[in-house]
Length: 116
Image 1 (cartoon, rainbow, N blue to C red):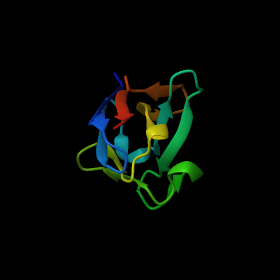
Image 2: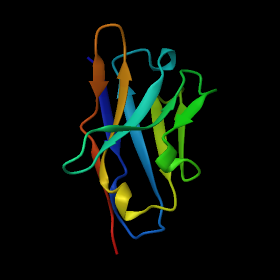
Image 3: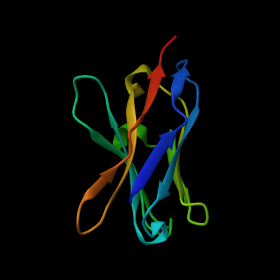
Image 4: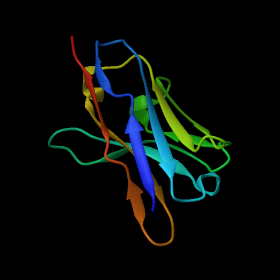
């Protein structure tokens, strides 16, 4: 079955960096676009970044442009989110996601806390 497992979250000071990873299994990873979302307490889940199946096109939410980079390794079935210059407002649970014709699939999320 489809599995998405995020890792790499944690506590970081403002201005710091983290690299999130998402391990995918149960589907043909290289055929699908992948995305990262986040959800802060009391807020709706929002799109952070997305990458096409081959990695040639990447899109970012305005609030992370220039700070975050999405990438993927189709040989390893992995998608990554490199987060630099982190701000307290980046604090959230981060999820990876993909969609096929049947459903949306989400991981369990990884907590990112940006605080001094």
